[in-house]
Image (cartoon, rainbow over all chains, first blue to last red; front, top):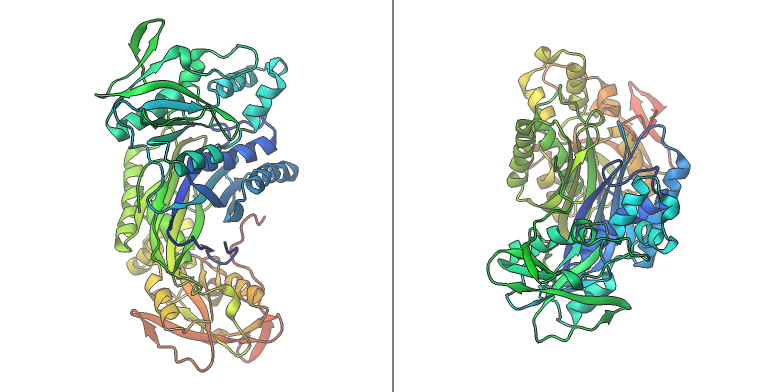
Length: 293
Length: 293
């Protein structure tokens, strides 16, 4: 990775291809300065890109941060934001290789680009799910959205420290994604950034299949049973990996110390449904969607 | 280039490396909706990235657009913005391979990432200028800033149509940059996006040299002699290429039909100066700088 100049230059090992993803983090859309410390906002800004690289089974290489700050922005806030971002970058061997800065006409705006590398043609796509494949998720779901809800309603003191830490500084599932790709286990994969219901629909649309979840098997996050199935289905914010695997693949119950849980199966057709207490109902994509009213 | 999924995947020819550049286009910082048609704003948004690729002698491959729009944004404006951007992308064989969208809490925000390709180790850097090298610029300077000034002071009707068109839809100097790299002519290069004085300082800083411009030789833009030397020195907005070449290189007077003009030479030391009417004075970097007060 070369720094500076008009562009950064990045060399990829022969036989590898580049993965590129770009994600906004906008004040009062993706984060709130009064709910989160600056270091968390920086961490989560980079996390969004790393999680996309993880969902392809890739290795992150470099990041580019475009940051627009209002004129009166506190320098200490900016330093802590960068600290949080750079700490996560170091942990995953990612160089901050460039970006852009500007004075924002209003709020704080960040756009993160993450460049990764994957052996040519080996990236795990959304489109590989086939009827009969099992559906799995890493970690637990719903914890992030539940903690965010508590923060947003002024109940920060009622949040268990572990839950708060998991919301403020989630771990991108790079190692899990890479292991699934290297061992040829996953037939399709996506990160659960928008919510299970929405992200599962993305896999089904790209693969031309349907899915049936078993409600009771969905692993709920949170330390003290406050997380509802609704939060786990639609909540987003967890940055876990959702993937499918052929029925004959033996999926370990943990990968890199992260629990892996089977939560349903891919079916023919296009319908996405959930079975709960013996009853099957349609599952609509109700997670985060940009530009929704 | 692969589209969709969590990331885009891009393959580079063997022996090539990736060039990556990222540039904000923020409403009321980089553009004004009342001064420019939406198609021009889209064109110039992509242009900023293409111009950076040109300045390395690279070939653009793919672009990623992150776009945040206020809730009330007119759909026709967005369509025209994208038309302008995509027309320029097609002209230079660039795929729009991804990006992000969001609802802006205020004004329109765009961040463009352009990915290019260059033979490994062959990118033209800012750091290769040596004492005795000649300084050249493509095209003309000052026209963009002068037209912008006229637009900003409500004198649109006094602008010559050619000048308006050059301001609204500048041509990125991809062909010129590539030719300079392929023929091993340029020892250092940068695009004049911030203004000649500022961008020449960037070359001098990175190369550890000084420079002396000959004021009378600087090619002024504009059809009717309204462009001042001050605009050409500090104006930015022109997206021409500024480069240096060893004295023994024969630099053509036109490359890809764009005039190339010698405007000075690189000297020892660190001082950047301009000679005008026989007198030499110090040239300070007074072009566009982000975060300036």
